[in-house]
Length: 123
Image 1: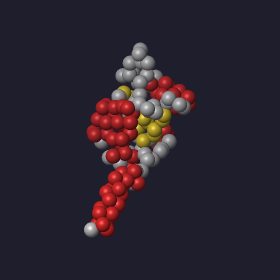
Image 2: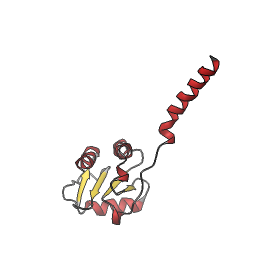
Image 3: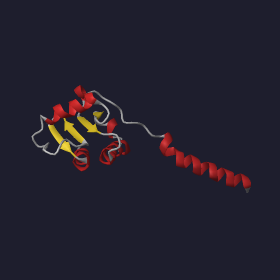
Image 4: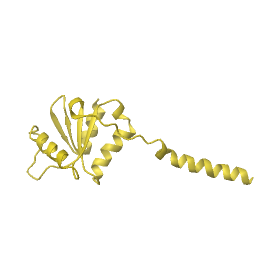
């Protein structure tokens, strides 16, 4: 009986760790061959929602996605500012927020977690 209890405990621990063991980070691609460029910020809950959606649905295996963190990377922040200039649909009067994605094929920006997720759903 004691061996069965130990075995059950080990199975439960392994099952709980499976999520972390099987985690695969989102693959990185360059902007030149990306279908979608996503600008995000470390600690941004809306950004994490988008990244989790990508990871959960393994979209990085189907769509070329370039991720660019902008809070701690000045070069990525400059890229975000340059990209937004191409997007009249984004109102920058109150500043530029993240997450923000750029659809390279249609030359269109998507601002906010739900519009980005909707873009993926439409694919």
